[in-house]
Image 1 (tube, rainbow, N blue to C red):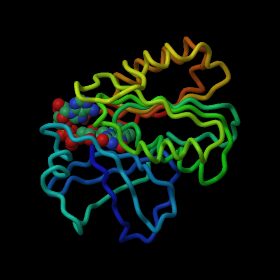
Image 2: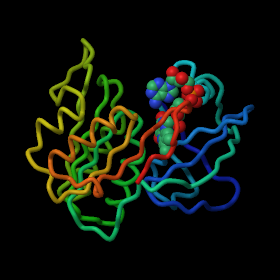
Image 3: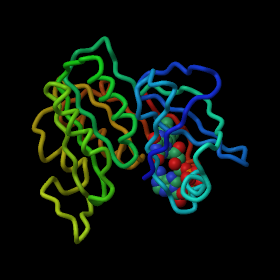
Length: 229
Ligand SMILES: Cc1cc2nc3c(=O)[nH]c(=O)nc-3n(C[C@H](O)[C@H](O)[C@H](O)COP(=O)(O)OP(=O)(O)OC[C@H]3O[C@@H](n4cnc5c(N)ncnc54)[C@H](O)[C@@H]3O)c2cc1C
């Protein structure tokens, strides 16, 4: 995964809500790819992204092989509805996998900055220990947001991983550790198979369908790129 930070040149400001995404044009092509912002609005026009590199991916290749500091990119947005429903006060469960960390980090940073005190837990799934990122900040967010817990889990810990935490697919970890999620709002973000697996698990634990909000990081070949609610 890569941490891409862009500075806005023009216009001077793009207003957005934490959890939304931008479309970034792939230089030299007519194609764009969607990426969720991990930052909160107002930090000097900076935009932060957490981007997974796929072998042979168009944007992936640009990011892994070609981009350099000072390059200019064209973006469009913001888009998406993966934003915190401010009118609600219910406790929260976030479930994320891989680069699905990005918008959840944006939401958590915004909760911490604004003193939102809704009880919250973030179940985050990665393959091995080397795939975990922003660990230190997520632990700090446990201090900054009252009643917030961060629960990372590894689905395929590597031989050398020194890991005493949860192991398994993140949806199985949620099933194992939670007995009831009734009354919670759920926010789910990551690759489509993870999102599709999480929804029935959350429903079975008592979260009504209308209180499950999600962004699927659909690939370019698939239909319905912005499957939020
Ligand atoms: C609303 C939205 C928000 C998104 N936010 C983010 C984000 O914050 N961070 C992020 O990393 N991505 C995010 N994505 C996914 C992103 O837009 C691209 O689809 C992804 O980065 C792949 O682009 P690419 O050009 O590198 O690969 P492409 O050229 O589109 O794909 C080439 C090949 O790579 C492989 N591949 C690509 N994507 C996947 C995948 N998801 N799973 C398995 N194999 C794959 C496939 O073999 C595919 O044929 C988001 C998508 C959506 C719809």
